Length: 189
Image 1 (spheres, rainbow, N blue to C red):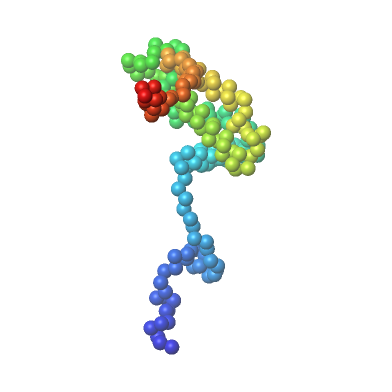
Image 2 (cartoon, rainbow, N blue to C red):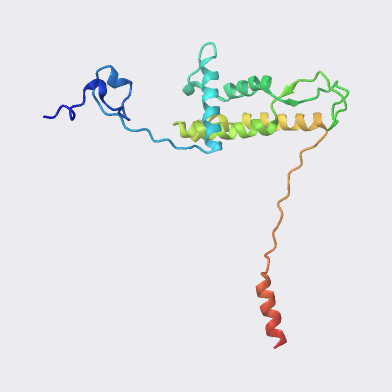
């Protein structure tokens, strides 16, 4: 045997699937990891789900997902207000109801209604993707919808901009120009 064909363990080329298990003496193959890029929505949904899970773990006593109900979700939404960036004027504020106040005030910052609405949508989907049933989904509870509606109304009044339901536009069927030109061509001949 030629000594140049024998590879000593110290001269061994790096193994692309080598992991921490090989260094401990275990000798089993690891599957190569495939990385898939998540969409922005899927990434945000995963972050939101992890944040909510962490919130439940930090409760005293900790709350398991199976014990979670709509009251925990409402508490979570109120907790998130401290990280909000939307100024919500209080009734006693001189700028209450003004869309563009001319000066700063001491009114609190809150989570915007639209952000909370989108968050609940993502968490509702994540709950069911993680094994929860749609019948017991705390994010789909009527109390959550009532809370979101109230937040929407309060924020609209505080800003002086009422939310109005958008009317759906009816799109008339458009006739292609080629069809019109053909029609005019036939009439002229």
